Image 1 (cartoon, rainbow, N blue to C red):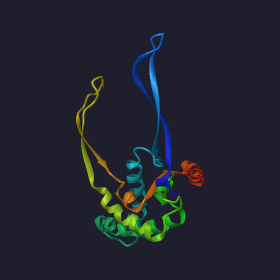
Image 2: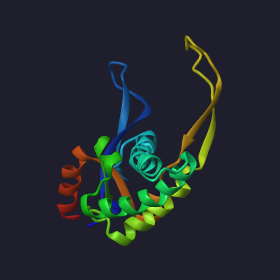
Image 3: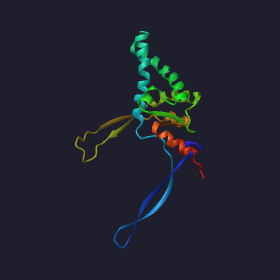
Image 4: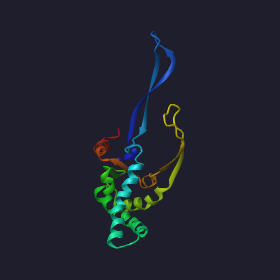
Length: 184
């Protein structure tokens, strides 16, 4: 079984136009199957900071160890992070930055991605840094009421193409248990 094949059953209560004798609305129950989402919401910020934490040792190494300019150190750290990230994700499912945030990378079968898949994932990571700008309007009851434009990073392109998932460490046993279940 694959993570993409796991379904989650949820019961949705829909109101009807009928009422019981006490005046309470009568609800119909509908059971739906939704695809299982192993990830957690708003993980883009964690992933962005994890990538910065991954790059920082290499930037410092190239700057202080090899006496390169800061800009050159940043440029040289990118392929280094891609290479080291590929190796560490395939063996341990995590990098230094991801370990700090307690997140791991799993493929569709619940295992750490292979070297080739991890390499493609890390190369596609460069395309993830395209920002998405959204207008923010505060709710009417907001105290501060400041409108503005927010910048968010959509960091899911590499996971969609490679069929990998970013999950919290604590969620891995649940995923393994669901993968072992028979799909009836």
